[in-house]
Image (cartoon, helix red, strand yellow):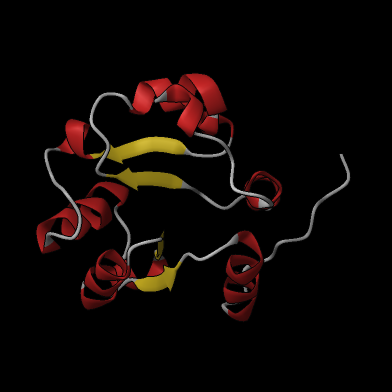
Length: 126
C-alpha cells in the first residue's frame, strides 16, 4: 500500500508556493490511522497539518456535520475556507456548508482555479 502513494505531478511545488505565501493548509480526509504511513512516506506535514482525519475527529466527508466541525475548530467563517477534493460529492457538500469548493483534477487546473480566486502562488526567493 505504501508504494501506491506519491505526489501528483506539480503538487509538491504548488504546496510549497502556498506555504511560502503563508496559507494555512489542513488535511480533511476520511483516512483511517494509516494516514501516518502516508505521512512517513511523503512528509506532507512540511506543507499541511493532518488536523481533520476522520479517525481523529470521528466525522467523515460528505456528512454535513463534518464540515461544521472544521469551521468550528478553525474558528473561521465557512466562506473563508477553500475546500479541494477529487470527489465531486465532497466538493458539493462543502459548497452546501458555505465553503468555496474546487474539484481537483490535476495540479495545473488547481493552480488556475486558485489563481481565479485570488490566491497568490508566487514562489518566493529565500
